[in-house]
Amino acid sequence: MSAAASPAPTAPTALIADDEPLLRDSLQRSLALLWPELRVVAQARNGREAVEMFELHRPDIAFLDVHMPGVNGMEAARQIARQAQVVFVTAFEEYALQAFERGAIDYLVKPVDEARLADTIGRLKERLGGRPGLGAAHPAALEAVIDELSRRMARAPALSVPAGGALAADTGPLQWIRASVGSTLKLIPVDDILFLRSDEKYTLVVTAEGEALIRTPIRELIERLDPQRFVQVHRSVVVNLHAISHVTRGPNETADLHLKARPEVLPVSRSYLHLFRQM
Image (cartoon, rainbow, N blue to C red):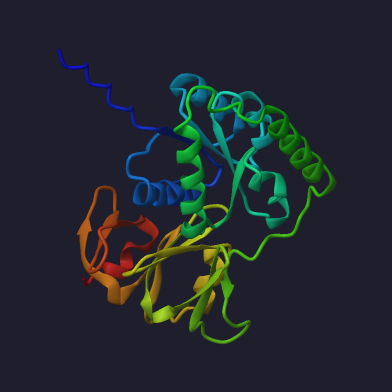
């Protein structure tokens, strides 16, 4: 009689918690590219939601932003860490402690570098391969990391904004945008930009080849861009006119922009519809 076949391993699952929507979506896209077997089962906007979503979905991994309103990443981690693998996501290099590298908890610096994320994925796969007890392999070290992070945050509540990207010159028309991705500095020619989309803290810079996140607000960018080429079409969207394929009218004096080289459809709000009345 042949031996019974071993049950197929279940796909690993993850939760992403960050108060910045662009960061959540960017991390989810990178994970889908580098670890297609992983299922992101929930996204959370703060630590309270992170704990609630964790209790509901019981994911194997939690990606937690260190700084979130209300219940922060530290407090959420104390409730989650012994039950799942935790990866802290931080905008501040100062929080990248040696204890992370020893395997208690991993960390990623925003904007997330895909090479660094690939290393993290490799470590997560190794830990998940050793189930059960995947969340409590180093409980003492884990608690020490959380305590140290909490102390550092308390000592430096007003750390300056890190260089997640910047304009390439202080004055004059904008020709390049610098975007820091991990340890790599990307120089993006303005002519290559198809559109910009912002949330409260970050701006997504999109080209035909890819995208990057910077911390320069969209209101500062629009002041430096060529108005004959770049126009604001929504409070959070600026588009390169040369990148537009066609415009479709929507309800209530709105419209949608379709691009030549990307699948995204960009909204045009009522305030900016007059720009396209002749298109």
